[in-house]
Length: 562
Image (cartoon, rainbow, N blue to C red):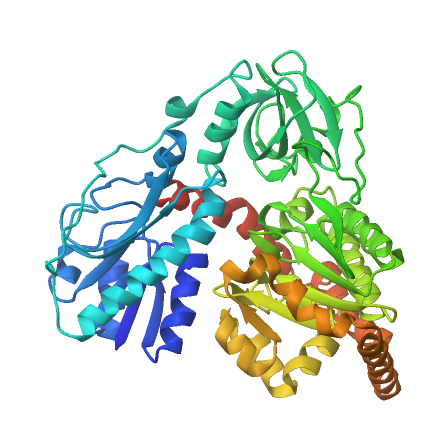
């Protein structure tokens, strides 16, 4: 079928739908639209058999849906209507939620239902649920709706649909507003309902901010609103009966318009740096095993012959100081008497490479860009040159740009079924990229495929990634907890392990003879220096637009549709 996507933003769900429907043989056109006129023009240009709206803020005009069947993906159960479906579900503690694919009509979210799926609503942020459960359920419902369309069926389909949902207004700050004198669990739920957009409004360190990335702290106590400590980039804040860690904030209050931190979502300690005198540093090593909930985004655990290094970062962004801590944790993992090190990333994102927000908020973005990419390269180099262990990347969440290349530094790469990869840089103002990608990507997929992946700027699904050799295996989400143990067990047997290390060393020696590893980095960094410090400002303009304009537009869309 010829299917036109109408999306406010070609986000993770929309990209997942693109790669999976293309796998099914459909011919797609992707249109990012902000008005009815743009929708009409896209439909006239492409002349689709079907229109699909995976993430759309605006109503489709009657001039479009009366001529072509238009299916809307709504992140709510049947009967739910309104722009804040997930916000309300999380705020009110719903135990079950879902996705509905319905046909466009004049009444927003009120058309005939083509398919729907439900799922248990776990305790997590809105953005985490949207990326995982909502997206998985949406794909199942989209596939069912398309099958019905191809068979020439139209609703009603003879099934009884329980419409437990109802029309709800937009969820405003006044609907979720709480002070630090509220119970920690309730505050956590309210923050999660507004994460990643628009953020929960609160006062922190004496200034008004928006809060993101909350985690319960089980042991620390204090006066509500008191800053109890800092760890890595997060701040611990006392509540009525406990405390919360806050990883990121967005701040306007107390900053001049020319302060580069103004209105940028940043690590909490960076956004509030001048207001943290006397706040104690509460260090916790990655290998520490706390007995109760606390903040530990980089953590190392061992099971049998395997060491597992987790690094769970908001939006998968790896800033300079964070990378330095991650490199130290990796070196600790190397020092342990294990045979394999598994790099687990985070559940929402594996990694998206350098931290563009932190770079934008730096006093010298070009210099911070350079520091950040050098820190990425140092970690990648350490992994590539690990000669005494097998290294494995386990991608449980989406990855982009240098984050994809970071995974390719490992000997083996496994991915959760359904994640989306974007192994390219150039969309960020022609950024060339580094992380030794000119060595690691062609080594995996060949020169031709590497060039196509980096030039096309298209998302890549796990099925195709497996076919072209970018990943070694794809694992269903239900099998992830124990899958790596079974996969790695044979190779961890002493004889097989020694043989594999010998083959690995021989391959590295051959590669080094053909072209020294550091020459790849030198060539890449020469290009990056031009991106960062050269006369062409394209990278800086694109980064600024992404962080300060497009991010805010995306947040607004997410707040309306999530």
